[in-house]
Amino acid sequence: MDREKALEIVKKQITEHRYLHTIGVMETANKLAQLYGANEKKAEMSAVFHDYAKFRPKEEMKEIILEQGMPEDLLQYNSELWHAPVGAFLVEKEVGITDPEVLDAIRYHTSGRPNMTKLEKVIYLADYIEPGRIFPGVDEVRQLASTDLDRALIKAIQNTIMFLLKKGQQVYPATFHTYNDLVSKKGGLLNE
Ligand code: DGI
Ligand code: FE
Ligand code: FE
Image 1 (cartoon, rainbow, N blue to C red):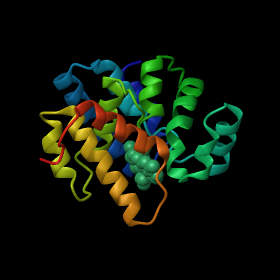
Image 2 (image 1 turned 90 degrees about the vertical axis):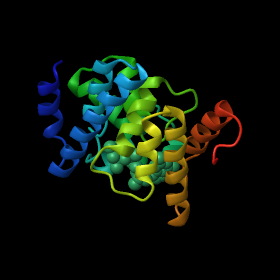
Image 3 (image 1 turned 90 degrees about the horizontal axis):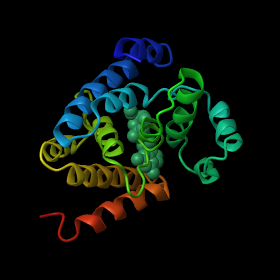
Image 4 (image 1 turned 180 degrees about the vertical axis):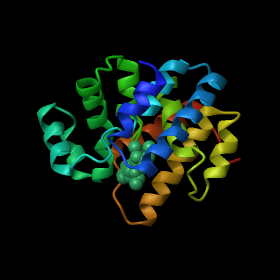
């Protein structure tokens, strides 16, 4: 599927604001894929569809999680997490994307997971640093992203966990597991 067709499909699923975010993620993912040697076409497709399910009713997402045998513990955590695995399912079912690497990049774009592929890292990070994002600390992650994919990812996850803690929200265990996995592989003193 070409980029124009993909964008046309996703535009109907999301708000104008979210569509602009999607364009930003697509452009950023293209750059990161080129820089770090991930598949550029797959990065583009994953980026375009990553938030496909963002505006589905909670009840529909809940039903899909239960019926499709997705991790049920998701339902005990922030519903913001649901659109990622549900998106992977719907993009396959409704759009006909079958590439498992693209579907996994969509599935894990919010929580991450241990042993993330390069494509998954590119999409997670592109989602975090696309030009429309303005949250505190994003510039530091942008800087890191130009030289070190894993360190950028670790910083992004640190910021996310910190943000959730400050708001007194729960943190989904996979987010911690992703963080621990990346740090253990990097080893040593990451804050220097
Ligand atoms: O869909 P986006 O807004 O583009 O970004 P996203 O898919 O990374 O969603 C992030 C939202 O999910 C953000 O509002 C925080 C919320 N959230 C709740 N619990 C967790 C979480 N995000 C992460 N990464 N990990 C959590 O445990
Ligand atoms: Fe998302
Ligand atoms: Fe997003």
